Image 1 (tube, rainbow, N blue to C red):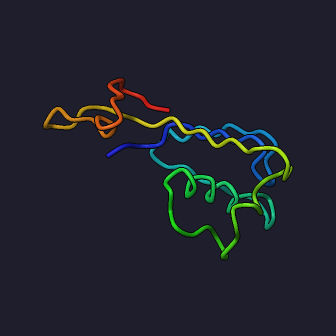
Image 2 (image 1 turned 90 degrees about the vertical axis):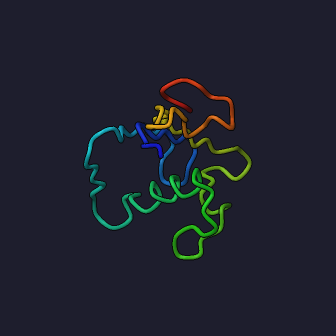
Length: 99
């Protein structure tokens, strides 16, 4: 199992560029309607390769500039478990953090 430590987006819908630390035990996204909370959660959904984004939005909806790519980057933990295995061993990533 891994934990998110940081999320960074560039060109992702509402967010031209943002870096959000997620390394606390509790992380709260707050703000008024339309401020980008769900958009940020959808960035996490995209990283996790979930089949659906919020409100049946299509991926193209999130491109800030349709002719330019968007970047979603996460840093996650990759520490050994009690059996000495890491979450990303299959990908041959053997450091305590993975991007």
